[in-house]
Length: 217
Image (cartoon, rainbow, N blue to C red; front, side, top):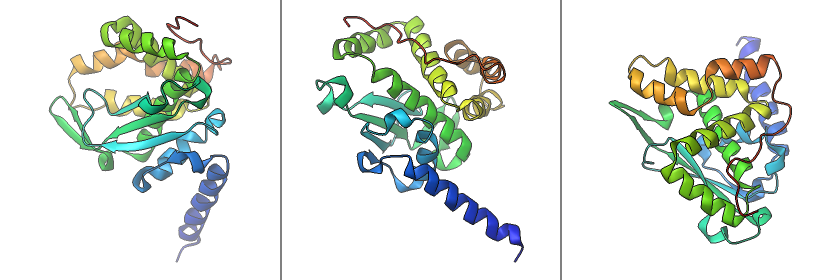
């Protein structure tokens, strides 16, 4: 057996153990099938060590692949005690294309999870009233959606996940089966691959982004 065949599993196990040591798994609920990707993504967010998060599969999420939200039962707790759920769609329908989580490359899943954890970072700084206003605006304002989604991307890039975010965007934008209309929507609402590269290469993300649309603080 070649030496590299032995080294790779050992190296992966070592990296996984180091990552897991920096994560409080007592307050995280993670499905086994996506545990590797969750641990990789959340290891970039040491601020979430004490934040309770459940990663939960759902058969289908309307217009989304993943969705981060406060757990309803904890919504009226102090913001530092809030708990969160990140819903993960088992079946992903984009126009005529159908994917499952098993079809998605591991690095792309890490990027998607990193983006959702960026939302959690945003939410945890908002008051309960601020979260209520946030939800209303998200339903009715495309400009607010753009600000919120770009903020989540910026949090992820600021935490060192730029390469993963880039792979996630390219997975969609380089997919020949998806229409230009759909790709244009992604370009309009999210940070572009060119902007991601600029932020990575020029190290422009030095401070965490401002909270967008906070009211009633």
